[in-house]
Image (tube, rainbow, N blue to C red; front, side, top):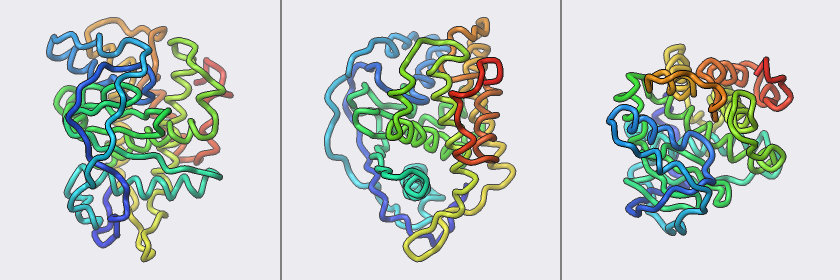
Length: 291
């Protein structure tokens, strides 16, 4: 999506942070781990050991510097860091109107790597949400990995889809979805897959209304998405489907090992949210065969 050039986005609270390496813990929720798989599959370097374990990881760093030169929509259109930071204002406004008692998550733009209570955040773990911190971590270079390794378009709306997906996990944490539907293993109808598909649906609901959120002067942050931008977001959703990743690895597609859902499911639930809003996103009431 494209920001309006004169939209004021300087009020975002995102921070840029990085530099510390730690072992990956087991608490992260979202697209985390995708890039580890990509690197392993396409370079022959076995990094999958980074994904194991249920530990809490190293203590998170504190502080961080403000995103520089991120004051207007024009800045957001030019720079990935600023684009993600600016979108947080839009997402917080959307969810503040949709969820009573909404609390804004912290957004950390990762530079290199940084330690968290859920493990290391970097482009080798992908974007993720850390529930005990109520924090979203994104390394923008993750999108370059998607482009290079999967020959996919990771344009502005595809990037914001990923961010909106992680904000969806924050909403799930706030409203009790994660507590009500704890991890029960892998599989095409597992709680993990249902949680991920609901976050995709929440992202679609936000995209449908993203042009309605305005800055302090009443200027919409974002222009309505174009058909090509929607196609890019759907392409990104397909790229991170479990079946697509398994097929690209050269192995068999095994639904029993799925943690996020198939490409078709991820696209379909994104579109369900875009068409029907947040109310269309109850993935837990859907029978396994219809998920």
